[in-house]
Image (cartoon, rainbow, N blue to C red):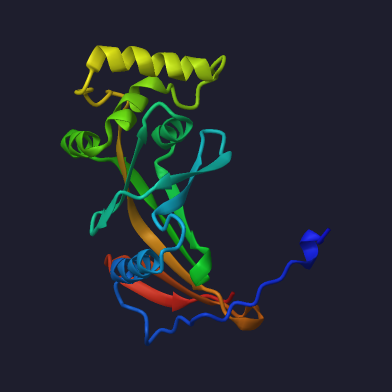
Length: 212
């Protein structure tokens, strides 16, 4: 059996230089996520969301990005979940994309806010029917007796709402407004490329290289 400490990988696919990167981190992100989609890497839209609770204990989970623009990065979830409760207590969070096949990581930090009710309504209406029923059926992050609780809830709400379940009041979108981005490209000999973008006091992006 291979020892974990003996596992090695040499990163040699690409490089990330200041000259080749874009001055706007959102445009650099757009370039990289487009390349991840084109390369058909597994779930290129999956990102790890890190939050901190009122006791300063961190937690992570994987969520799916549903949009990005100059205002920030958007995803949707249950507001009563653990992440929802933690964001209510401390609205600062971090996101991470890891595109293994491309040997790339993107890290994003910033403050989180809820999106508008209209934006949440529009996205909820676009979801498959089973997913809309599931938003009602799952008391996310709560202890339940068995899977039959979820199945029973889904059947009950399916019968109640039929083809037109409304958006639950406890479900909607969040948007992280970045103040820091980091783009990591694996390189040979562990001399990886790391470019960080941070907002200065004039709300301008400063790009700087970090040691790996």
